[in-house]
Image (tube, rainbow, N blue to C red):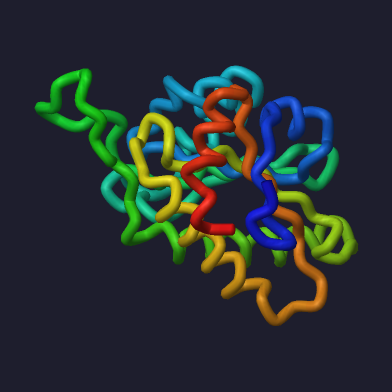
Length: 196
């Protein structure tokens, strides 16, 4: 599903794409408590333990992390895993387990994504000497799983941040939003139809 000329939503495995160098960046949302114990964060923690270490060793106190990010860089080539702090906690205090509670931080997300894109612009060109149109950024439906966020609102903010940073540039990176589970992918496609 093409959301914009540079932003595509696909059904694929983000971990495999990054592991096999099909993408250069994997951005995922995480909480500020350095757990990485569920969802895609758990798979990243298992496959790329240094990304988890970057989360645990991030210099900001947990109370200051929301809207910021930590990262791990592949040692031998240009590639980054970005731990984007998009929610403070991983569960709502006092909520029943069956209740879906929206924990996503909408107030900080758009600026956070702009900051990440600017970080990638600077580091991609310094590390590779390649133009931005060769950079492939990937992420899940960030904030829409365990955080319980609104997909249309989040993707709209993501598109705004992307356009604010890259809108006037001739060469732009490609951004892939991927979902591994086929049925979940179809469900998200249905929800995102208003955006295309």
